[in-house]
Image 1 (cartoon, rainbow, N blue to C red):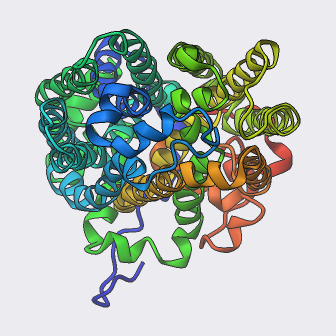
Image 2: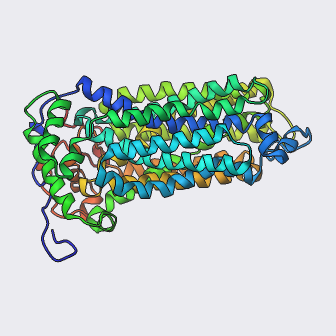
Length: 526
């Protein structure tokens, strides 16, 4: 392969060795992945805590007095009483900062390792949590949110990569989902804490925001103690140390095949001086499309709007003081459904979960829109029966998201990139995720005011599009070694025309699948 200066670089992994991989899941890997996944808990805690504190009267009265007065006005349109760009900026500023930080994190993750970015993320989040808990004015509050965003940018960039590279191929999906499980646990924890702190007189919101420091400390200390991934060590020239770590995490000395794959991939990676430029080449088009579409669709299904603003949303529907309890229920449901996904992802595969989850989410969004459109006016409240039905349907929506797009929106992009563009690819994934999170967070309250119940139909339309996208364009990656993922694209009915050197199908049987072959069981990892 010719590189920018006219010389010829290594070709990377050109030979399949997956059937020669030895070793399995070790306690060492499980512990390392659990500690690393705490980065997800930080992300989740912030999503959950934001919606809770923005529904607390003491918080609104101090920082967003106009919203506080509108909320207390009985005649105010239910859909519009929280419509305030300053309040939206409190939630969304974090994600804009995270977007910028994720781009900065890419070269740090590549040059200094995955652990370096994890530690940077933990320290930034600790500073942000401290500023928010001690905030005395809006400027201090937003400064804290920006520091939290920097922490999330670094953490989301490094943690999914760390999990994908540490996990054995046949269990990569389940271990990578530790990130999403930690995220959902963080959301549920924040909801329960908000439910308790809402009863405290004037400082409950400070406690909610300040407790974010606990996972930040765990992430920082864990990042200092964790081993670096063998892929990162070998890419940065420490082959012997990389092999030692690989033998330790696989529990065997027979790691020649996997070691050779990583060495081949690292030789190609080191020949690429500009990974962001390289990722734009035609041969990397499939991965680039997935790095943009998967995180965008993960947000455009409407889940973050429900999780950000669950208390606000339920209060809008007339739940009153029960709103925090209702949002805590959705948080618990999300945790349980993610646990289910961990057990199924390496058995059923990614495509089955994404498609089935998409179908269920569409139905739920449409049902909620119909109920609110028919039974809920601008100044009316839902009856108790219909309110309970809305909560049940939203929980069913959250369940579907929890076993499909929630974890897999992170898992798929983190496992499909070759080593030479993996950090850059993950940066794009995180940046796109945070960009759309920022847009939805900033616009949701205004959209709710304008669209009213139609907001749910807006998100339902996006779910239809993303489900069709998965059906036609996402190959199955279950059980495929991370350094041999290139063969999946070479087999796919659409992407093979963009990837050079398409092999015979017989040579790659068991790696990935055509859209119509998604039910076939892969040979790898079985």
